[in-house]
Amino acid sequence: MTNTFGYGGLSERGPSRALWGNEFTNIKNDPNRGVLFFDDFENHPAHISDQRIGKYSTYIDTGVTMKSSPVAVLSNGESGILEVAGYDTDGDEGHIETGGGSGTFMEISDTAGEEFGVYFECRIKKSSIADNKTGFFVGLSEEGVAASAALVATTGVLVTTKDFVGFHCTGVVGATVNAVYQAASQTPQTNLAAAATMVADTWVKLGFRYQPWADTT
Image (cartoon, rainbow, N blue to C red):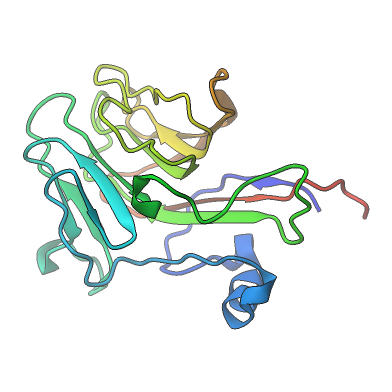
């Protein structure tokens, strides 16, 4: 099997068979097959400042909120949407991460012999894809990435010495999402440029499957 990194254009809610095949259901039914973390943010508590609530930790500038979307912005009657809102000043930030910001629930390794590899998928949309507006990073990272100035205010560049892998929109070009990764303290790498092109107020799904073993087929 080959590594798969990045795809766009799908919009349905829930895991995509194009990425997961049957593995999502298999792991859900048998936890011995791996660690499964799934959250569609139904009835999620509001974050309005730097705080730890349940399994999440946030860094939020004044005036920014993270909360379940009001009915007025839900699409097709869907629930389970986490809305980041309230940007009223250049450089405003809102970050959220698991593990309380100090721990993780899994690792990515090319030597640990993971039997099934590592899968990641998200669904995201932006209210505007105008250039120089609303950069983001979404993916897997070492703990402690949700912090002040994680994205440079003027360029949207992701700045951290932590390990990470995922999807990055600088906001300088507001519609373009790149697949990126970084080993701790090394130079960030773009694995796939323009992995997806976003459309304003339209869902796009982003995901990857990491399987470090050699292709023997």
